[in-house]
Each structure stands twice: as C-alpha cells, then as structure tokens.
Length: 180
Image (cartoon, helix red, strand yellow):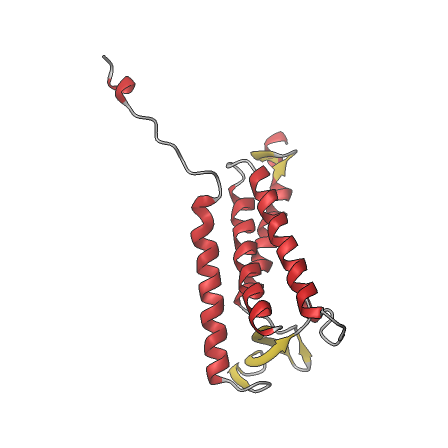
C-alpha cells in the first residue's frame, strides 16, 4: 500500500480563525498603552517625545472617528456609538466569512480593523469615551489625536484598499498586473 494512502487528512480551522491572535494582540497593546497613559499623564497634559512633531497627550474622544460628533451632546450618545460599533464589528465578521483564504492581505486588514474596533469599543463601553494620546503635529497644525486601536484600523483599511487595487474581480491571489 502506498504511503500517501495512509496519510490522515488534517482539517484546517476555518479561514480567519488563525488570525484572531493578531486581533487579540492589538486589543492587549491598545488597552495596556491606554492604561499607562491614564496612570502617567493627567488629562489634557502632554509629554514631548519628538520636539516639534510628536507628543503624548491625554485626551478623551467622546465622538466617533477623527473626533466627529466630539462636540455634539445629545441623549444616548454613548449607547448609540456603541451600537454603531457593534454593527460595524458584525459587518466585518460577515465580510470576513465571504473572503477566500487566498486574499491574505484583505484578511489581515480585517483582523487589524477587528482588533482596533474592539479596543476602542472597550473604552467606549467602560468610560463613555475613547482615550487618545498620540499627538502628531507640524508647527501649529495638529493631526487628530489617536491611539494604538486607531492605528490598527487605519493600517487595516489601507491593507484592504491595497488588496482591492491588486486583486482582479474577486479572484483572490490574481493580480491586475497578470493581465498586462
């Protein structure tokens, strides 16, 4: 009997489950850095890291991404934003189940978004706001303050966009340059 016929098929976990460790790592890194900021930098205070370019500044974002709705106050604002985040997480999960395993870049992007969204959702559910602390600026021009979770989400969205630009017609792994 040939040796190949004795091989026992090994079932591979569903695509995407392998990547959950990355999402968990993002959540842990995000929560640990926020805890350190809470303990070492008082609200609205800063520590200069790179003069003229980067500070660690303890701020609270009660709004959505990029401070949208930060200044708006209305009843049930925090629960509404929590609900929107949960809908987004479910949508990410549904989208992830539709991706073929070959679309590795998109899967990594979704995993980064998942980890970042969960990290920020923990803050919002626990405190009613998201703690931001990375303050990048040039002279008097400041970018919105952000955190580890926001960085993961941004990198994840960039990975998905790159995957969309590189793949052709939903055929994971087939690059547009193959047809040139």
